[in-house]
Image 1 (tube, helix red, strand yellow):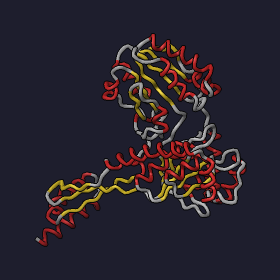
Image 2 (cartoon, one colour):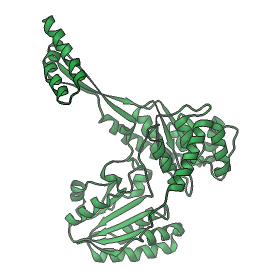
Image 3 (cartoon, rainbow, N blue to C red):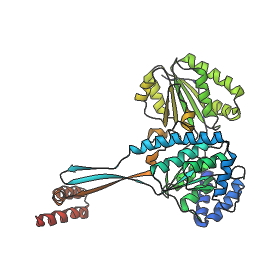
Image 4 (spheres, rainbow, N blue to C red):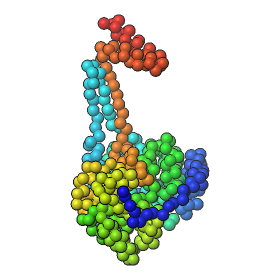
Length: 425
């Protein structure tokens, strides 16, 4: 049986009624008032009231000039890895047509959506990588028009690195506006901004609630909560590496979740001590210490089978496996957003530069969905056609199938074909 060396604090159930009410009010006002409402909330929440929310070519060039050449080169490198992997994914999603019975042809077509909106959060950190993940992916999928939005930084416009990343990723339109009002503007449109068909990207609890309420008006990627990591280790793991990886996720947010799942008590105890040692000098200790203290868990298991069971029940966003036999877990694990195998990979690689997408399911949603990828922006549609002979052969069976359900008019639509084609022959 699994046992705990450290358990997270029990969290009170969050009352989201006020959040829902605030989000509903903003969405309703933006839907009815357009840019006037966006401007009102932009002044209220972000101290931002520009002549136009759309970023100009002059703004883009100024942002580019502010960045050191090495930062631009690194951004370009990271984006190229993400673009390459997305292209390979796209190649696996294909059109096809088959003849299932003599004269009966069924097919599949892959059609990109027309327009998507990418929300790049601001807040504690400038999340350049969110621009890579949410703009490059739809462009590779074939989306003609990608709109990107991000909040202003301290009422002074977009962080230069974020703006460069959005444009380099291929955004067709960039807007400096944040929060619920930005999502509403992309969903409903406003002066100069045509509505999009899908909105993707992470954000705070208000952004998540806005996506929940907008779903149906537009498509969404997923509903994401605070980030989370589970690290699975055995006696071959290096506690200093494991501790660094856990703290790398803990710095995101005081509500981030971390778990260490260990087949070795000794490694687990050494890792816990190492986390405390590394926290002393950690630049982001103010956040990471609270996150680890409140939300960190350390779990001991006695077998690989039990480890798989606990991992799949946890269904983490990020799952690192630092064991001597990590291929066993690749073959047997089922529920995770993205899997990092061996000491040589880390969540930070996936978040920033290795090429996989970092928009991933949280809150156990990995039980039923994967993360953002090109397929989210593609409609898999079907078609069918048949010869007269094949249609005549199908008609009787289908008429009876309709009649079993008392859908008699459906059945008649089959019978009239049978009658017509029989008369012709």
